Amino acid sequence: MPATTSAFGKYLHAQRKAARYSQSELGRLLGVSHSYLSQVERGARAPLGPEHWPALAKALPGVTVAELQRAAALTRPLEIDLAKSSPEQTDLALTFAQRIRKRDLTPDELAALNEIVGGEGAGAPVRAHGRVVDESGKPVAGRAFVYRLARARGWTAVVGVRGHAGTATAPIDGRTATLVGKPVDVGPGGTFDVPGGLAPGDYALDLHPTDGRQLWAFPLTVTDGVAPQDVPVACEVVPPPPPRKH
Figure 1 (cartoon, rainbow, N blue to C red):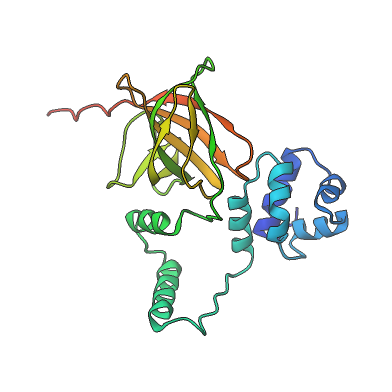
Figure 2 (cartoon, helix red, strand yellow):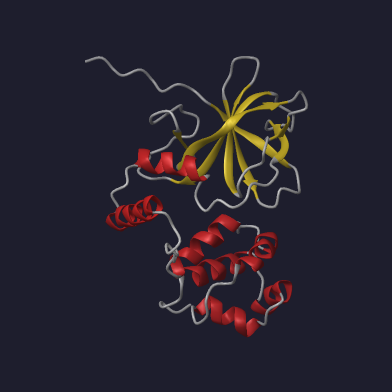
């Protein structure tokens, strides 16, 4: 791939290669020609539009709608029409754009903003349902808290060690996890159905069984909300060691 390719083109090329699709094969699934797809990957054309994203996410296992949205945003500037906005909305948009340009938003501010707007690259909520199972496939029941996973921002994370910054975020698997929504009941068969659904993206479940343990279960990858998912228990959460006395 040429060095001048777009962020969207690089992402699409890497995911297509990982799935072992030719441009012709993927083009047929999307209803576009292989030459058009080639131009998108090289950055000679604009990113594929949102109407193609669900089919891409279905065809390529490593692709999510949230990552497609992020790659498209990195490829072409996001334009917002403020002509009909209120003065308060205009001031907020300009202030936010200036803070983004200066890159001086703190992790706590980013976590709070993600919680307010529904997470990074959030789309419309879709159904999120399935089962929580342990390593042997046995269902695990209890009360769960849903965390949205995103790229880590300054965290050094160790899976299985409890860690929190403020009240909204915790590190898991080298990623920042932001608490979203209300607690979810996981039934005796390990079944759960998140009320109101979740925006497309990657999530983890902070699960509290009745035996007093705390478990991390992930990944829960929300896409179209149709198929239920088995979310495996990754590890038991343990408190960090007490500070050493000198």
